[in-house]
Image (cartoon, rainbow, N blue to C red):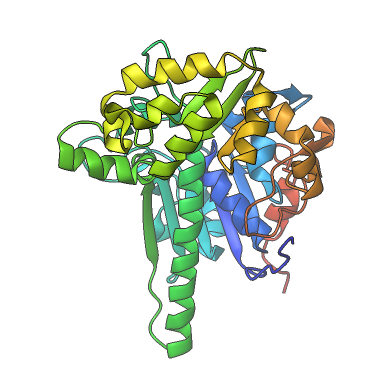
Length: 378
């Protein structure tokens, strides 16, 4: 069921974020009813220049900016800076992703907002600390935070994940933080307490760390990076070259896997008696499992594993996922009409209303927005 409650109707958000993390938060606020103005420099958000493009639009920008109004201002120009300050003063929520200190110089700092505004800053390493000034992207954050090290390929090389997982995680965390701040503001107002501005400092560093909470805790206790917790879970290739994923969550799952693969003696081998032992002897166990999977086509194994109540799935590409009958049946990727891009299927936002309207063209609503700043005659 698609949730249609939009509790932030009437809320005004000035979104000066670029890339993915800040715009993701702004898009979620727009989806939940807020009026979100996307503020961009004359050259546009850098995400407009990446990914698949048609005409002036890119899929990356459209994905995270749906439902917003588009405003272009040159913040190096006094008139542009004054307009931005006027909008910031009216904002319930201000989102920015500049380097620490830059927003304040451009008229978009906390001191430029109202007395009970929520001011959200998203940066690579946070607003303080020895690395605060370092430039950072999703890839840098994945490498710094340990995610790349835990995502080694068969070649032994650390890899970043294909999607912008740190950016998206940080964007959702920012949305949660803003919601918490708005709830606290509502409590203050209901109780008649004096207004207070709330400044939120979120970083890609923290977003990556949240993804690795258990691994970081384990590493602290062990003094080294933990091994794979549920060997021999992983991706395996059938005889037809197609891949499947199989996972184990309980020790008896290994016994079932050995039975399905025709390897019952492995379940009796002391080296593989439990998850800890299998992790220690992974180098011996995994090749035997890999060879067994190579003996039959992928779909043979998926059918056999599912019949045995094991958790398994084909390794889908995004195209495979979009065409999957379950994805189609539950409406997991509703189409969104995005101007020159046409109808683009974007995944539904879990547990939230879906964004309404396309991402704006660069500066599409500038004149309309600035007209509201003009003084009322008389």
